[in-house]
Length: 395
Image 1 (cartoon, rainbow, N blue to C red):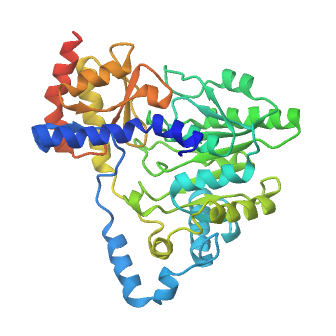
Image 2: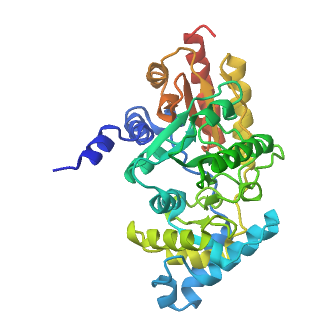
Image 3: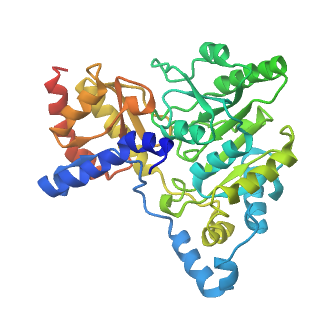
């Protein structure tokens, strides 16, 4: 018998994955070249060549027991030290290997943090629109997700509502910038105000309120936009980073968590998060991918293609009459539906073989997410269908 929690998860299976399967079905029916699947955030830029060559060199030259064996649950010490050095150079911080815990991608990083800090009925705040799995992660540890309604003017967080919804049960907030699904980067002014509010509430309630900064898209920022590094503004911050998008290796599941020494009770929290790595079943991050990072943690894909896709889609879709905020980072465009029912709009788009994800999946009805980590050629082929879709609504 399936558990009650899993029954609910099965019932609410990811819309993104359903759209992905629908794309495969339509491709079989109409031909792959005639289906325009913008549903999945699967990187389309090739892995940097140095990554592939480094993996080959590791397998040729390193001790196979070290490459494929167990290590400390926090990860290899030399890898963690290297990552700390890189962060310090980029952001003028002062981390060491003790502040870094290797994890199985950003999703696992968030889970080991929540496992370590949540007690039943604790609350975690998220700013809508947000990545849909946050709610599932929080519920897995008997916490409650508290939503802040979306600010559809510019998709910066509604800070007045945020301050009102912090309660004595608030244990953490999740920040995702550059944001999935909007592509918006939270400004330094926004970050500073969030931190000011949290400092005030920590004093009021006499307990820590953590920021969990989910940062898989940090390196994908356009037009010289700067993504604030939040530990510089607030001590009780976890940073969760993934190489999935930076190196185009989402299937390899490698990332890390930063826990600053300045965090309240940091020593015990570092220990708890390390143990959580083991007890949730991951044990440790993939050993080969950790060895890779010794030489490739500063590598990154060339985001020129994403930028070209961003400009092309934004310029053409707005020309057709669609509305959206121009993305500043990540590889998503959050389009306002011409009708209130975003699910119905997605259904209509499928008639033109266009697939994207309803905004209601991100707790923001009336919008759709278009993932432009696809080939530039596919976007060009899709534009006539987008134009017909717009004409359908007399735009």
